[in-house]
Amino acid sequence: MRLTKIDHIFFDLDHTLWDFDRNSTLAFQKMFDKFNIEIDVYQFLSVYQPINLQYWKLYREEKVTKQELRRGRLIKAFNAFSISFSIEVIDQLSEDYINFLPLNNYLIEGAVELLTYLKPNYHLHIITNGFREVQNTKISNSNIAQYFKTVTNSEDVGVKKPNPIIFEHAIAISGANIDNSLMIGDNYEADILGAESLGIRSICFNYHREQIPQDILQVSSLNEIKNYI
Image 1 (cartoon, one colour):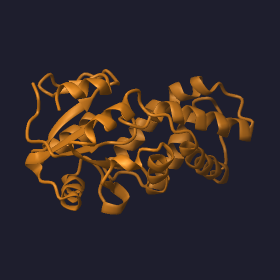
Image 2 (tube, rainbow, N blue to C red):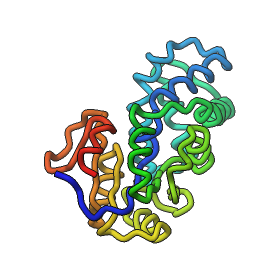
Image 3 (cartoon, helix red, strand yellow):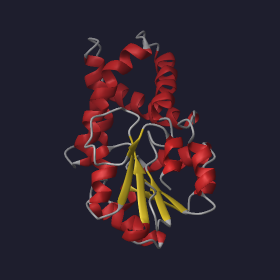
């Protein structure tokens, strides 16, 4: 089944094009080395990652602030190892992590190949919930800025995916319309339900292998997307 009459394709960034898990692991290792934190980084991440996902869900739902997200996910994760830091140290750890994060810019396998395949025939865009100060750096440092006509960041719009307002904003600044647009992202709630609430077609890059409704068009590798567009 090929999707027809698509002119504009909107991508999520983290976990869809930018290999957040790999880059985040490297950032944490650098942070642990700087602060002499003697925890195995992979053991720490097995605790931190689900906590981080919980905090991002709360952040999308406007239930915690940016600062509460940054502090809370670290405090809760370190508490699981019976380690506590002052708020001042937590803030420094958080700041360093954010600064270290875009220093490594591994992309999801197949990302450049897919973008190169799509660019001649489609207008490409990004819609991201990530923090403003790092997302543009990620895009620039990973050498994918050339592929995109617009980048819509939730901090600039004032709302986060899945709020339809951010999708409406992205559509408006891109010159697209709902009927000729496609959203590609990894998060079923934020990317897929958010887009489809406006009638925007979508493809879920379900590399997490999560259980989502079978009627949702989904792929497990970026290369598979070429089969549909």
